[in-house]
Image (tube, rainbow, N blue to C red; front, side, top):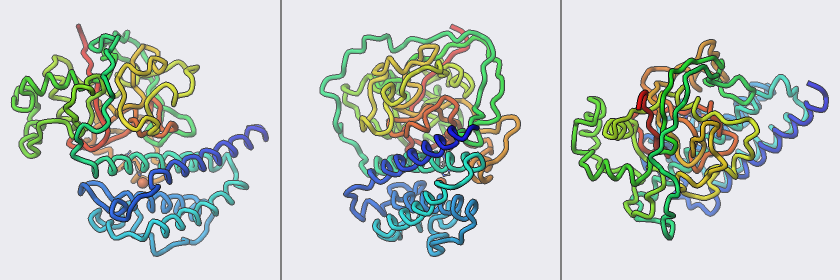
Length: 404
Ligand code: AVJ
Ligand code: FE
């Protein structure tokens, strides 16, 4: 790297650090203490916990590990560590003001370090911290949405725009190799090593599955008929007794929006009902690849809470992938058929608890990002993962077939 590019990398990171934090704090503007500490579901921590945890991780990795400083707030270590307290114990939180002070104190030290640190040596960690904070923002969005349930046809579009597109369309992806994964400096450990994957010809939905399409499944008794469900899916359904997606709004003004708030089992059952299947992670990623010159992401997809809700699946023609798929990035995450697992040559970073402990054949991969996802998380190689039973994530899906 030349001197010039080193200083521009540094400036770029400082800018993104600051922008990322500004967006994080926006989520907490005018929030009351009740919301701050509320745990709407036992699997997710209160939003206030996520805020403290963001400071904790920045402090642990940047201040302690890189700069060798002692822990500034030892009283928070147990509370805000990912493996510190059971989630139910995370409702007893310091005030918002105290946590903001924690964030600010850590951040001002972090910026002092950033201004003089060795860029080449530390860039990967700084990029990690931006990714980490962004992911917790997404979880904060999710917890806030859960506190609003049940939704009662909130803020629908005035009129559902008649879709000019055939939303049933599938796209043929020709047989051949593509490069799966990502070795760049901002990639997370689970995205590398990038490697060649050969896939036979397959077909994949051009759009995510819409509410209208999913309604057909519901009206055909999809939730009552074991024929569409795997054994594990049917067992899950008997326990959960659900009859519609978690964020289902009923009203037909949402018809062309993607369905969201479904577990992997519901996505699997719908796919079988319609005579298709879920794409593998590789199939999804190959079809979602874009031409490198594709312009600014935020204008071409529904992300970063800019809209504040889902959008019709054909709303962003400028965001099509190289093969013409809509909505691969933003709007809703998409379940894939693949278990979350390591790529060849995987090396854990910055700690085994980040990805490696989840390579357990119990988590399914989700791709693409939602209407809340920060722009610097949006890339076809990004891998999210959850248990197949989870439906709180802003997740929908699209289907694939091997032959037509
Ligand atoms: C990628 C969203 C599954 O929440 O466990 C945040 C992200 N990891 N801090 C998670 C994460 C550590 C991760 N997910
Ligand atoms: Fe975390």
